[in-house]
Length: 412
Image (tube, rainbow, N blue to C red):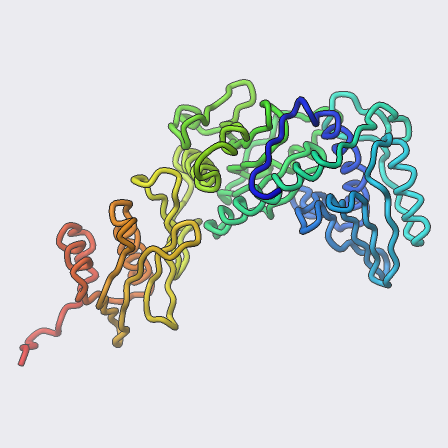
């Protein structure tokens, strides 16, 4: 199975809840071994080619990695000195899983002491006493991992558009969700909320600075939801129209939501998710007055949301070795603008756009992105290409870029 799998919560909810507790056991090992980072970023797990991993963790002069393998359905524990142990993922209680995991670490001479109870859940039964959560459906555990693979891929693409402070794409075992967060750079007021069975300082540290955050949670709807929120929520945020159709704001949670099932059934799931992430971020950034030019602009690459092509994002990148700017749409090349550099000027000689995308704003994004790059680099413009000539005629504000011959210069 590939793509966005069907995930009816009614079928696998008990497995989800058991996995939640198992990931908390492993996550707390990572929390115990790693050095503290801002916003508790030393704690999450990460999507891997097999499942979910802690990544490499230090243990004295050695290292250890723990990985949920949803192909073989085992928890792999591997060390840098070549030793390994395995814990089977099968119908078994949290108490049993916890006891064996700790025993396997002991066998590797890596005993770890953790707080043996879950966090961010209303009822926090200590791991050694939890015989309630004991369901494991291997097929749906694998499907869930596939959904994380898809979400991680799109979240990573979305994250690449931002050059301000941004979190990794990581899996929080406390709330059992995949998330990525952008920061405005400004401090936030003390966070007034709380999570069940979680110390207030944890949430206060998580929201110490102004954020726009988005993620994927396997709950809240028949097949889970994608979410996006801002803290502190700026005035007007909840009233902003967002994409795609079917996304909505819930006052109960203070978030925009996009049902996973709606996304899964969309003709272009990746495009629909990117549109949701981009439009909700823009709602937060514009309502809160973020410095978007400083946080988003980068030399040689200007992402642009093409409003005439719903759910599609155009990316413009300078490719110096080809002497052109390339326009890509969801990874596919759809246009290029050839140029020659001459002293302090850039001469755009030829522009091409795939005929299938001529009405989708690709040419405009290509010109806009390349001119923004020229302006940042202090280059003047010589528009030989007819598309660039037409743009300059229609956009007087860009005419200051035009190359001006020295006074007294006469064409021979």
